[in-house]
Image (cartoon, rainbow over all chains, first blue to last red; front, side, top):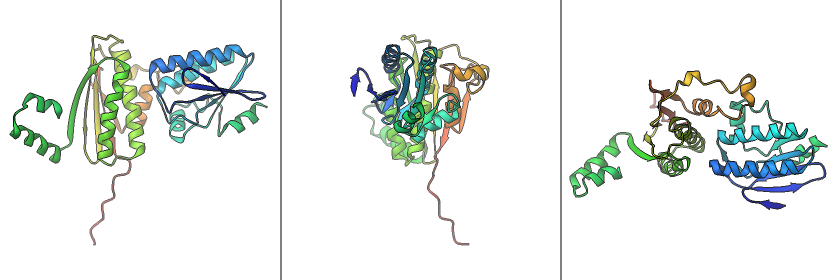
Length: 119
Length: 168
């Protein structure tokens, strides 16, 4: 896994790029801006990217992160790519349900099932 | 409570009065901080310690954390428009059953009913506008003052200790 500063790890499988958030809490605006910069640069580097965002380390996030995810999904859509989210903590999944973002995002139990879906 | 002691630093009587007040009624606190997003971290740490002291559970702490973050960021960004010369006031009181929090900014206020519902139509694809929905979802009561620059929120403990019913 390649560590990118700040806050994400990037791994490449046969048909997908897996980005994992390394922080337990994603809150501060400057962190969210850095995340956006890092993730967008990964998206730009791969043609028609299949991107999996792995939330297994994340225990808390605010609505600002939901905004970030929407901006990421738009960019991927513009690049004819596909986005999958996985390993979302039940408390955070509740936030996705309340905001109805479960309808917008494709959410999988774990990385393996997300990769399988992208095959 | 620290603020009260600073006002009367040599008064043992006053300190005793303060302590008896804590024991008999919900403890109330008021904090005024700089209007910057990171200022909420210290406030939450204070509140979290008091929630734990009062036996609030993990779900309560998660809910209070989330709503505090959302409401505070609204105050800093939309209320005070990121003006560093402005302040945000956070007041809260806590007892065995509930926590009440109010957050006041120095902005002109807004009309919460004019905010679009982020769950429908094209709003679903907009990056912002979910803070208010989350506050309403995670708190039992959310109320704005008439000016719209102060939000008051209440959350009751999710799993209060069950009281044993007296024998019939």
